[in-house]
Image 1 (cartoon, rainbow, N blue to C red):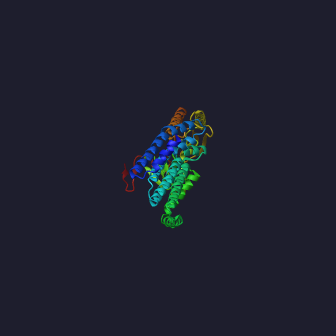
Image 2: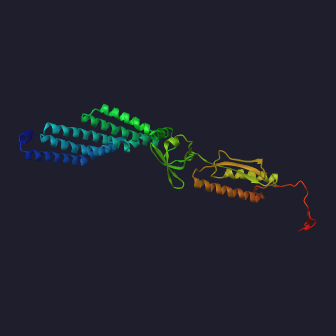
Image 3: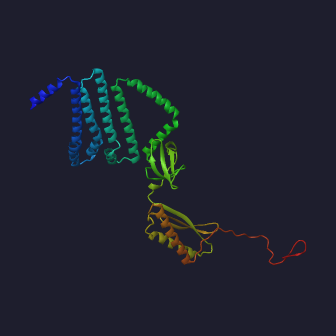
Length: 370
């Protein structure tokens, strides 16, 4: 069998007919298509089934990242082999050889580009407990490095001087950085935010510039969805230099206020109200038990002030308002049962001279005023 194949290949190699060479080149190309189909249907599927049996899922994710590049690489090898059989001139084959090597570099870079930021990258970042924003930033940076390396290698394959190109890019980058200082400041601000992690995507934040939920973080800016449902884009340089309150990370939600009752309230009634309100909060299922303060704090200008300070277990705003409303109604009920009135701002005025009590007074002209 081997002798027959060798004789057939010798017969094919001895043929000088251009049409015959084109036919063989086409057969080589179609053979590459056949191999690609077999690889897609059988070989790749078999490898995937093997990876399903392994303990880690990284190998399967990496294989999926290189799936399309490998299939296109088979086609590229078939095209290059077909062109090589045509015995073209050395100059033309040199061009096709450079194109083939460049295509191989692009396909390899394509596979790594898919790998970084894909399923395998997500699994590794989760295993390393990386923050989502930091993971996204690292993925974008690595993808940029992959593209840059592929570009430099391809340029070298075509015999261009990379050192001059790099020097030119360096001078150009310096000029661009001087002309775009604000953009550079935003980039460094984004790096500071990602490293310090004052907030992540989905957090509710409050700054002097904006308040809302973080929707997207990039190197240049951060997009925040306000409670008016508008989207605000804030430069990272601004956010990096502002105090940021992250409401999402609070462990409990505070309620603090003064309850003023009238000065006519008897001491015993006031003491009973303080004790009953404290008991209400201590037994409420939605009040956090760590810190509850109900104290008769001060003699205010027009009221006796009871200081009330506690936390709710829920952090959700709507649930917090519902708990606060329920407690307010309970406090009103206690005051009604004890016959205690809530004070309002008032002022008493005392006259130094005694006022006329009569309905009619004598004015300066001797007439009786009504």
